[in-house]
Amino acid sequence: MHAEKICDLFPSVSAARSLGDVARIMERLSAVVGADRYLLLDMPKLHAIEPTGIVASNWPHVLIEIVGLEALAAIAAAAGAAPLGAPRPDRAHLAAADLARMLPGEIPEMLASFDLAAFVSARVHAGSAAGMLLLSAADPAALDLAALPEAQLLCCHLWSRLNDGRSDGPMADPLSDRERECLLWVSEGKTTDEVAMILQVSANTVNRYILHATQKLSAANRTMAIAIAIRNGII
Amino acid sequence: MTRSPTRSTVPRLSPSALRAVRGVAELGARFRTLAKDLGAEEFAVVLAECSRRQCRFRPAIDSDFPKTSRLSRRIASRTIETGTARIRTSTIPFYWDKAGHFGKISFALAERANPLGIDGTTIAFPLQAEAGRQGLAVFSGPELALEDELILTAHLTSLQLFGELVGLSLAGQAPLISNRELDCLRLTADGKTSEEIAELLGLSPHTATQYLGAAATKLDAVNRTHAVAKALRSGLIS
Image 1 (cartoon, chains in turn yellow, cyan):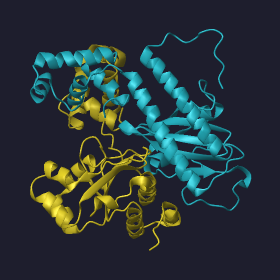
Image 2 (spheres, rainbow over the protein chains, first blue to last red):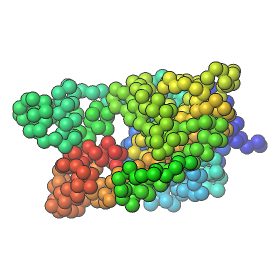
Image 3 (cartoon, chains in turn brown, blue):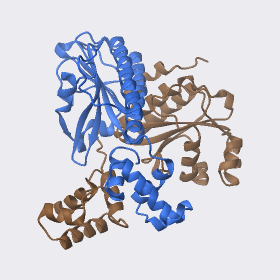
Image 4 (cartoon, each protein chain N blue to C red):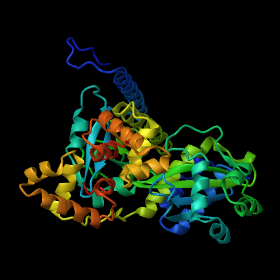
């Protein structure tokens, strides 16, 4: 059987428009690296395991349900998580034995029963959207990591095409101009009194603005409010 | 190659900063090689900085290193709306040509687009690195020669070099922040008080406060809130 190479996939990648197209190409992409199953997880914060959903996958649905998003993210985080553009890994896959140590009792057995014995993961991006590609095989020896960097980048292409036309929807800015201004100055190290002088209002007023901003951002205190605001591009 | 300056206009650099500068120069050389492989006359690597409303590009390194090239400055002068910015939703390279240079050829691994309104035949590779850093590697020149396999490898190489560049700049910014200090900063960003941090990390509140104070000093911040803001903005924590 003719084994497909990465370059054989180029035309299909550029023509991909629907989830169906993506699914078909992902199967071929997985095959190039010797994997049977793939799972593309949307994970906005790669460092903190908080997946928001599955973009594409050929895992049996029942398996995804039993294993659960959190465990999937944990597996993805532990299976190498190769950064985009990193050189070819020589190994860095997770084996069944490692899984048994990481996850609660029934999950490793469940995975084994579905012939998922080895895992390798790679970070993927579609613009600012971040996620993980989790590839698995029944036989660890079948995984061929030589083409992983290219497969990883093509996966980014596919995900980008799915995103076509969609804006990234950052957190809406709920703050008033004054509230935002106060947070900005405090984030630059100004004290309440200094901000009051800058904005020509009383210190009480500044504290009120900051309190409102903190409440609107659902933060525990002003420092956390500032962190949330910076992360969401509000200041 | 760059000529050494006849008089020193650069303030004395710390050893780690020196290492960072040499590292950047070396990365520039590798980008230059990549430019040659693409048949490009010049290159510019810029960092994308997107607020809620706008995306701006800050020059990182280009063909004129250590100076800033016209290409870099031209890209940096462009401001685009975050909502419609291509760089927010797509990692697919984009290219445009002057005077029909590429004729009717289209490429599978790059799209024809010129969101930055730059003159000349150019290809731009969207880049990502740690701490959510985004950027663009732009290669330009009248003899630009593209084809899909080359686009793929050039993109991978650019990503790798960009990752190293970002790593260098992150390291150069706060070279002495300890892991414990980072832990305290992260927890503070999540709204924890010294007492709560102390409990979570198994320290005394006094020690937690000390770690935060040390972090603030190293980041040249006036208090822990300022330190958290600086750490977030520089990508030290996310």
